[in-house]
Image (tube, helix red, strand yellow):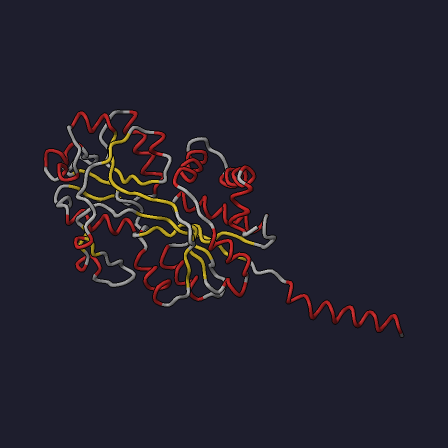
Length: 320
């Protein structure tokens, strides 16, 4: 009788306490650019290895990621690379407006423009974006043989790609150039091939990124950022976004944060604390991208090596 009673108490105790100690599985978005994929791996390994909480990654585009984070149901809990001003509209909606998503206090500095190889820039005496707006200059960047140039503005899923599409119109380039929107890996492979053959290739260039270490590039001058000339409406905000947008200056000084669902503050408070504190820097992310893309190392190995080499920094993020 006594033995039976102890067994019942034990079983009941386990059934009552198991839900209380069951850990949340944290779902981390993995957008389609290299810096975001690496930061996603960093966040995953810190959550798993340091906090002992299950975590995994899932692909997604910016509007889908933000909407899922705002729902707070665990479909997607973390956006590893919220770039501003590229994703400002989503931040306005879900962070400032609905107050369902939060951004890390820390951030890294980001920058974006258009680049050509320095040898090509010197040969064509090219230094300004406006010099491209002539038939003669566009022909130098003609790949298809139709006397129009080609210019890579980023993959179609990027918020920054929509901004550059507006810039193409407002800088007067769409009369002379066709845009391409293939994935980043394809575009930068084409850039490398063009540089090896000493041919012109016009591309998006942004930091943090490995290409500035790998290639000698010249960034084309644009008008300085002017708030009055920067009115950007994303397609997710308005179907008539292109007509309602005006972008005729360089990008403002940008920054990259980690975004996370505020529901984590109750579902997984230690994870939320870590995500609030995390702060990366441009040089670190650029170094990671170089090791993965150029040195062909596994992203998981790169970030785990970095975590092991920077215990004090990681502990600070964890509040230890």
